[in-house]
Amino acid sequence: MQTYDDIEKGLRMIIDYGIVHYAKKQSYNLHDVARQVCYDYYRNRDLLQYSVINTIRVAENHDQFSEVDHDGFSWDSFNPEDNINEILLLFENDSSFKKTCILNYQIHLVCSQDQLNIKLRSYQRTIETYDKAVKIQESFERQFGPDAMPYCKVSMLWQFIDNPKDIDLFRAYIGIKSMIGRRNFISSNKPAILSRMIGCKNKAAFEFFTANRYNKNKNLLPTVEKYSKRYNMDKLLLTLAERKYIMFLSKKEVRVIYLSKYMEPEELGKLIKETKERQNIKQRIKNVTATL
Image (cartoon, rainbow, N blue to C red):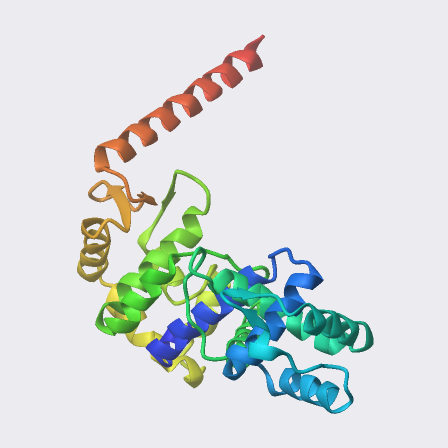
C-alpha cells in the first residue's frame, strides 16, 4: 500500500522490512557478534549507530577497549582477541548495547554476498524503516487480523525501483502470490486480485480503504477504477504470464480464474484436471458410503 504514496520509498521500505524480518531469524554466537562490532568500528564506522560508537569510545576513555596495531589485522586475518574479549565484557554490563550489536550482526549476515548481497548505508536507517513498516503492519492487523506475508526476490524490487512505470505488475504479482501461498494453484476471481493489488486481504479492508470519505487513501482509487475494467485486468494478467511471473487460466463468461506461479499453461491445466478428478472420487466415495 505504501507504493501508492511514493513508489520508490514504498519499495525500499519493503526491502528494509524484509532484511530485518529475515535477519531476526538468524542464529549467532556472541564471540562472532563481538568480532563483527570490532571490524565495523575499525573499517565500517559509518554503518554503526552513534550509540554503539559512543559506548566503545567511552570504554576507550576508561581503558576498557584497548588500541591495537593495524586495526586488529595481521596480514589478511582479522582477529583482535583483546578487543573481542573487551566487547564481550561490555555486553555483560550493557544489555541495550548487546541487543543492538546482535541485530547489527544478524543484518550483516543476511546482507552478505552469499545471501541477499545488499550493501547498506547504515544499520540505523534500515532498522528505523523496518520499525515504521512494523507499525503500519500492526495498525492494519489490529483492524483486519493477521495479514498475508508473500515474498519475492530482492532483484525484483530493484527492477521496479528502476522501472516504476511497471509498478502495477509488481502489485498484481505480490497480490496473487499472497493468495497462492504454498499451494500449486488456486481458484479466485478478478475482484479478489484487485483487492490484493492495493494491499487488502478481504472485503472489509477493501471497502474501508476505498471509501471516498477516507481522503488519505485517494491514491488507491485510480488503480481500483482502472483495473475494475475487464480489458485492463485481462491485459495485466496476460503481461504477467508473458513475463513469466504467474500463469492463469479462465473460461469465457465464467468468473472463476485459476492462478499459479509461472508454469506452462498445459502444466497448469493438467494440475487442475487432476485435482478435479481427485475431488470427484472423494465425492463419489462419500455418496456411496452414505447409502451403505
